[in-house]
Image (cartoon, rainbow, N blue to C red; front, side, top):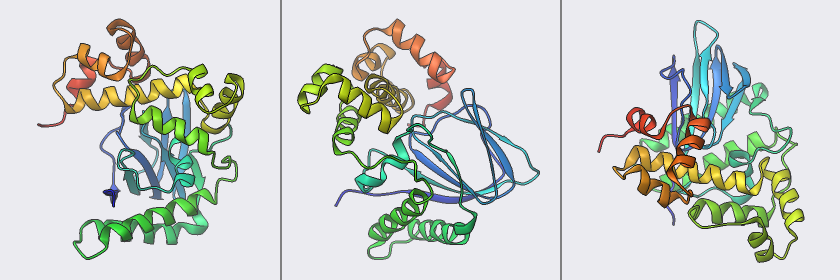
Length: 262
């Protein structure tokens, strides 16, 4: 069985306010206070009884609007897998009408219980702890998905293409090549992919490449030129310009800020 190690915890106050990223999907349950999350020019206000969902591709900043701010947080590493395919849409897709802030006040007690049990299982070595965490994460996702009727039905073709890109983003994918692979016309695939994910096929590929670049910058000593090649970008200047536009930092400054102790 594949490894499955979600991270769940309770937190008071706030550490990072400026735009920052997590190399994971993140779900937040606000239990006290009010807070504003910003993604580029979009701003979302969340308060007690709200759940907030960010994918690994979404840099965000935080501004606390109240004297107190308490929340539960769940972090899921997309590279581990372990999530039912039909529920991954909640984590990685952003179709038209997708709402990152959900009113879950009617389910708040139940959701808090799930978070508490996840945190407890994470700190135990009891038998079947990994299986229990998987069940609890799926319970949480089901409860949230039920609050999101706008999510399109699961689409196997789009899911497979997403996985191809996530697992081998260096490859030279083209819309025409993917369409031929799945016996679709380019226009059909383009429309289907955008309707379900909220972005174009090539935009999703760039997001995958950027996610890998950020991981390599923060976790390795590879030269930036080598990272450009490893992620499938055409040249260093285009990579640096695109990286700054998306992250507000140059690759070098990003490395200084997020380098993990090795």
